[in-house]
Length: 177
Image (cartoon, rainbow, N blue to C red; front, side, top):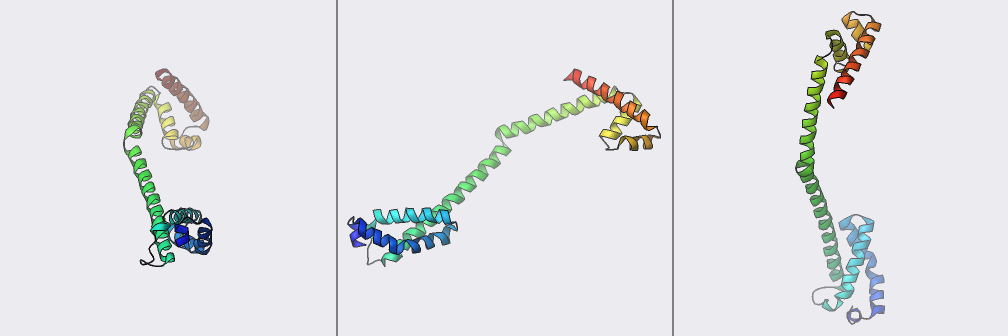
């Protein structure tokens, strides 16, 4: 460590070879992701190289000092990832709760209400039997055969009513668009 502190690259290479596995293990236990642990190991070893002159053997062993630097770097990485995730979640929540997303929700609600009013107006222009057939099929979910059975009307007649009613609805809705 003393030679590394003086800038001896060969001494640091030997120190790196000796400690890299332990440093990686510490980082992996904290970040729990091998690729993140590799990055933390590189950052920690770079910091150890740059700050080797600050090592004080009275404070503890070289490995304890390196482990402390590594642990601190790994914890910083986890905290940074958590803070980023929290910021993204908060930004996503704000975007849906206000701003343009809030405007879109209001606009969509207004358009839906206007569409419902246009449909009601156009349905009121159908004959009673057309309105009844279309309403049962499209709003109640009955098949043409079920509508015919419920109205006690031949299936062909129901199909004609539906076709005529839908044509009139299309014309009415197309004219108001």
